[in-house]
Image (cartoon, rainbow, N blue to C red; front, side, top):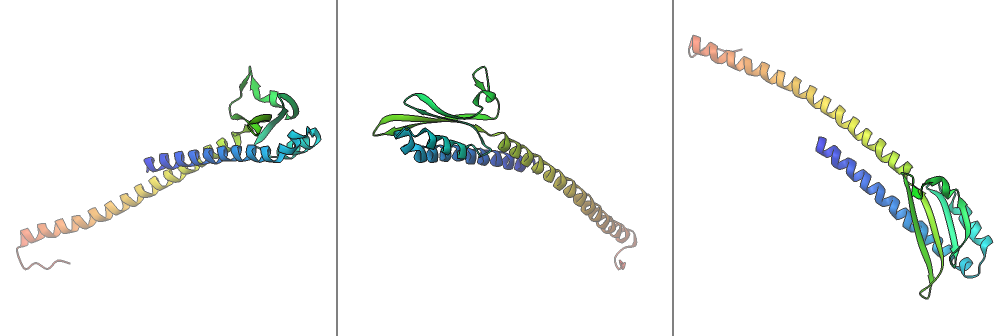
Length: 174
């Protein structure tokens, strides 16, 4: 049962992390596609609008869009998630260059907050451990009751055998 809990916990953690990574990649790809025309035409108002809509996602804490190496849109407080140029725990930085015909025309950088998913993984693990503990207690109690019943019946059989040995054949057992 303990192994089952460990495997289930690892499966939950791995699958949730994989889903979060997939969300990050999908978000960046959709951002890339939706901002392509605005990057080409230097439409900063459109890029700002796109960024403001995307930052509503609670898993995205900062979004930066650059055109030709110059940051033109910064949404969210990206500096709040750094300590000495290192992201604080639970934050993921991902970026993606935007290409046209092999030429980089812009870049999208985002900081994603995975603390909610990590909290979900931890609470799921605690829930699984609690369920497993209840199951262990239940199995222990059921095993104890079953073993007592079995021992009681085995004692009856043992007593009957002893009675037959003492009284000889023909003894009627009740």
